[in-house]
Image (cartoon, rainbow, N blue to C red; front, side, top):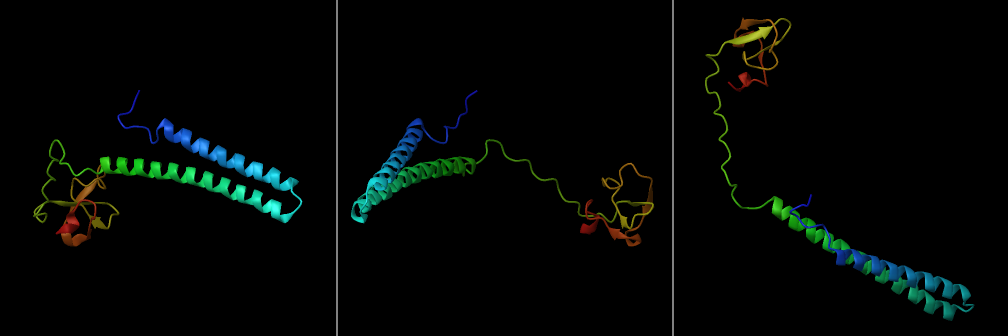
Length: 146
């Protein structure tokens, strides 16, 4: 099963990051062994320069790889948040109830709030008719939006 999106990085990107990291590590290891065999500080400074160069090679390779990954993530993000209009229009939201005062309100035994009969908080319970002044309106069933 293949994806329509390309992989986050190409094979050339993986090879380049591996090669630059490997070359950098080889330079650092060579400088370590070279400096270990040098007795004078002047000769060790040359090996230290090689180690710093190896660190730079590895760092540049990894930074280029991270920049490529960042660019790919940006492209994917742009494709997710496109400015094109959707193929089919979204359905209109249901109209808000304007007049809830004419609806019968109910309340189950032990409840402080009054509810619309279709409220999920009173579904399956024995309810009694109630007036709006009999308790606080429920925030779930939109009775409170009077």
